[in-house]
Amino acid sequence: MTDAALMEAVRWMLMSRIYDERATALQRQGLYGVFSPAAGQEASVVGSAMALDPARDWIVPQYRELIALVRHGYPLERLAAMGMGRITHATRIPEGVNVLPTQVALAAQLPHAVGLAWGLKLQKKDSVVMAYVGDGGSSEGDFHEALNLAGVRQAPVVFVLQNNQWAISTPRRMQSATSSFALRAAGYVTYRMSFHNTTDNPSLYEDPKQRDEASRRDPIDRVIKHLTRRGLWNDERDEQTRMSIRAEIDAALDKAASFPAVTPGQLFDDIYAELPERLRRQREELLGEGSKE
Image 1: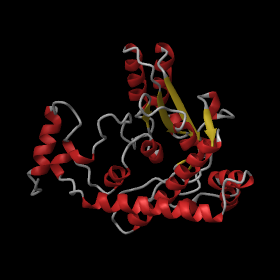
Image 2 (image 1 turned 120 degrees about the vertical axis):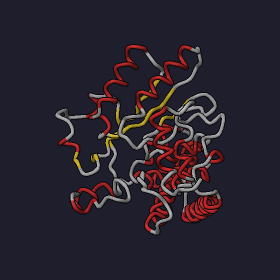
Image 3 (image 1 turned 90 degrees about the vertical axis):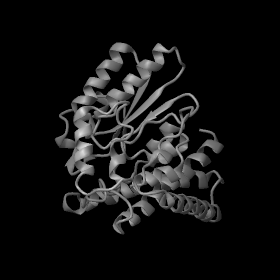
């Protein structure tokens, strides 16, 4: 990477880490939904996303790749609004931003990524789809079905498998008999340096020595040390960069908080072009229980 690209990368990585901290703090106050931090995985997320052209290529995330979406053009305040339960038509993905929404169900986004890539190929577009998944997701049927279809159709999709050693509280050794997830798909070996999400307590199952060892390999610290050795980083630049990022995130959170709260009826919007009868009945039942639009 060029020096300019490294400087861009470390700023995105720092933004990811600082957003993790702010979102977690807000969740503890009841102001943000369940949140899954990306601590320890910033380098793999940012590095892979920077290989893409936002004007041409697509990102299909799991739920830890929020900073990749922002780098690709998804406004930070809309991302925050999603976490704060303020998703309205005004906070949907803007036209022209080539990303799909985050996905909580493991690997459920991968068949969509393959379909998207296949469609782009049929349209003869020079585009690539980058789809993210974790080691836990590689045990799901959707993972294998998606990889098989991608291979059969030669779809222009790149699967980024992040082996962060944990599928919630299940360690890697209990997920696969293979020595490496790279035997399933190309993958990065990272470590989840934080909890799975804000409902998780890793101290109940994680070896502290394992976490300490991972902390010594913190990707942000490693990039900053590299930049410092090259004379591109110092304490003053570090402080200024972090202050600038915090101000940007705080402004986005303030703007997100100004969006109207989502109403029960809006939970059924933007799911189907025409809502199926089953969901229409559910919507009517929900709104008939005293809820207001």
